[in-house]
Every structure is written in structure tokens, then in C-alpha cells.
Image 1 (cartoon, one colour):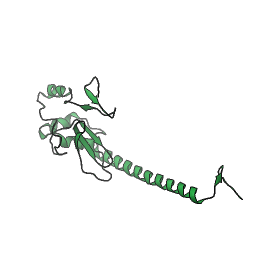
Image 2: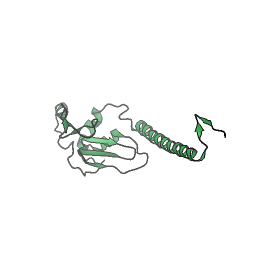
Image 3: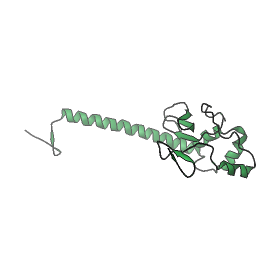
Image 4: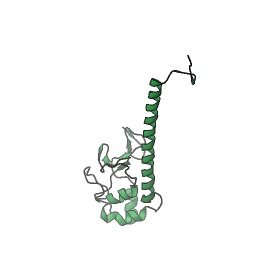
Length: 162
């Protein structure tokens, strides 16, 4: 276990950071809003996603679903679907408790992170491009194996004539 200067615990994946406790930036939020932030983060690993149960420490998106973790190896994933879209802002806001919804939407500036339509279309396009590329790579490998088994031997790229 490797602990960084920011209190992050780095485990198997060096680019992923898990916080053992809510980030210290939460003190800045308390100072800025003069409201306590009790309940903004959840410690309930099995709390459903998108139910305003509280933010998790880590969110991870993939081609088929997204997962949210309260600690290392302690999380829950969304339903699996083909071509799952990447909508981070919608996912985070859906987890924020209702009493923090206005502050959350106000603090995060509008831009490409909050543009769920753009991110969803790009991620869906990326998924189908990867799917097509995988199918074509498999087809190319099949054709190569078929050619090696059924065509005469090639000599430096030229057919040998007997």
C-alpha cells in the first residue's frame, strides 16, 4: 500500500486513487457555504446508485456499466447494458443527497463535463468503433489462418511455381 502526500491510497492501479476518508477539500465547501456537509458522502457500500444516497469515493465507467466505490473493493455497479453511455455529471448528481443538489449544480461550471448529450454520443460511438474493430481484427486473423492452411507456400511474397 502506497500513501501519497494527499492521503490517497494507491493500490493495484497507480492511476486510481481511493480516499480512506472524505477529501479535505470538504472543509473548503463548509467554509464557502457555511453549511455542514454531513451526509454528502455515503459509507453504505450497498446503497443503490442514483438514489440520492450520497457520493462515493471513486466512480469508474466502462463499456457496459459504471461502478461506484466507498473503499477499495467495496462498491456497487449499475445495470449492465451494451453501449453504456458515459454521463459522469448525471451519475454524480443522482447520488448527491437532495439537500446538496443546488450547491452541487451551482459549484460545477457548465462545460463538456456537464454536457451529458455530447459525452453520451461520443462514448456510444467509441463503443461501436471498438466493437467493429474487434470484429474486423477477428475476421482478419481467421482469413490469415485460412490462407496459411489452404494456399500454396509463399516465397518472399511470391508464389512458388513448380
